[in-house]
Image (cartoon, rainbow, N blue to C red):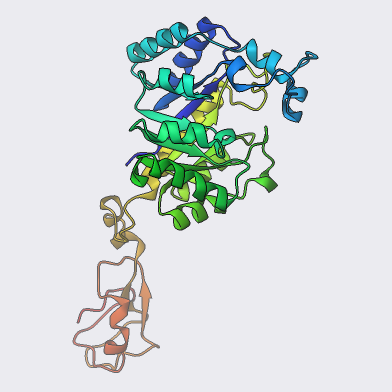
Length: 332
């Protein structure tokens, strides 16, 4: 199964549906499987007194609460329907993450995969509600312990979602994520402990960690992208630009091919090189018929289309069956 790559547009449309469509265009051109947004009502999901996270304060200049910042990034349900239709036209999968029950009910009409964000890992009400929707689920686990992941999975499965319909993403909820905080091996621990498909939601700068996750068996990769990192907004600076997104996806597809099927055998393209690269047993000196073959008069040299060096022990000590000149291959 090919790695499922989610180009995370998030709120990098800045509340403008025209910019959202440009993000869809970039995601499609980059080769992503899906483009993902975030569907929410600020009134229903954020207290008006909630302050911005430290990374949000760094990346936005306005003196405002988190509620005020997020409110400006809302799109209407009608606009999300428009984006879903646009994705269909462009032949790329539309996804959006709900922040509350009302948004999840709306999105259930538009998508068969639900991505649940890290912030909702302990939101029993939302997890239970999504678990009842009979959808495939991708669960991010930033800020979570293994016990919290287990609890969330139990809530989803108890609500009716089979465990084989859930993919768990390792993530670190810090933008950008420091390399020292990535702990990519935790992704493997998640897959082993819960016997689930696993993947990685990448918030690091650059593309190498996401690519490495694929080499470790990630089935899903999610990465934020933007039209322009210099734009105002909470996520632009920690996102890939269009060229970087394209490079990441190209590298992931190459890694998929390079991983192969795990069966060690010469490839079709290698076979033609065997004779040129390997060696055969040849005469080190001129040898007369009847001479005893020894380490003094035979050796191993290219090419490899003669007697294999693996037969060395069975040849040393025997009589030569013909005359040989230097470098002539020894024939059994």
